Image: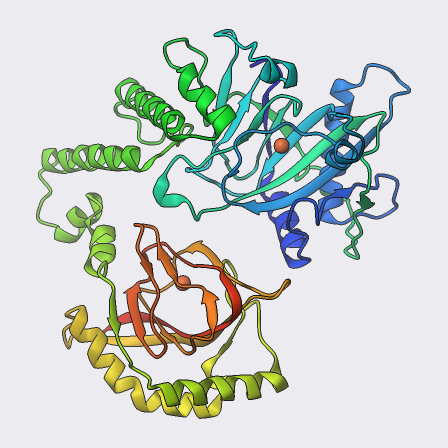
Length: 491
Ligand SMILES: [Fe+2]
Ligand SMILES: [Fe+2]
């Protein structure tokens, strides 16, 4: 489509912007939607990044010298849009006066990769939508987030995001959205304020923007490809199954085309669009190919090399621990109550940490900060050790290394942590004990669809490498003891 462009920026600056926005908790649409003040003397990374981006695009779109532009932005960590596609308007003004005003340009910076929640952009405007005037001339583009890329488009046309894989519904995508308004200031917004001040010297390289040709895109513009009945169902009724199937079919076709065109070139990573099916399909194909190369080279005596080359090592690591187990009532009601009381008592003094784990932080404290609980748990470790080794059939050649034991708190209060998004833990085996039951919601979600809601005192054991999430609690506080365990070979 003509008005859609993709750009690349330096990942260093993207990382600095992400760090600033996350650390200062500028996360969320509406609550943290800001205007950008471009007339300051000093800027933070976020301000400088956006100012540079805005100037770059304004230079391209400016037609009259007297035109004034306003920059509005927000950072979101979201799961896919649940309500289908939308247009970008000044929502405050629309809600008060019913007048609809659109930005001149919408610009989405991707702050991480996402293979499951693409951006959907159409060329369907409000009139076209209202009177269903679209035809096969209209187009739909699917773009997959790639860290350090930006997509710019006309926000007055219908667009949004959609999860194309049921198993990934809890995954979120990190985007920084910037709208450029011409001769108009969106209502009811304040300027972004930051006490971070950086020198823009030597940042030229990091601020460089380059236009790149379509990567990670599929155009659903062929009459045969785009089934309008399915698309209409999605656009108007938010029924997305037919539309998702259509995207997945296209992904498989694209990938097949790439593989046949590019049979011997394993380095081509320009199109990485995987669905679950595609992932399996792809993996099988590349494993077969690698295995064949190895057979051809007559170099079969090196078992480890063979295992690595066909990806068995990784699979082994995952599959070996794939089963989940619980040990019901590992801690009694009384012990749980005592532990919870001790947690409340200790944390009144020492508070809670929120930055112990860098990528997916929880509100937690290491167990050593609770001397009484620590001492008690030490006494129970032999039992846990036997249980884990028994369940996963770990023989005496290996020891369990409990490399991190900590107490996590989820709390249903506005600014408190209620849940934890999909992630893997940096260990081989993870365990947790639920310490209380006077809360609502919660539980552990695994991305193969299993939801486990242990009872108070139960110990839950699972592979650290299965993606899992802490489901949001809706009332009260939920305390768990978490264990990260590695395997160490006996010397
Ligand atoms: Fe939007
Ligand atoms: Fe975890």
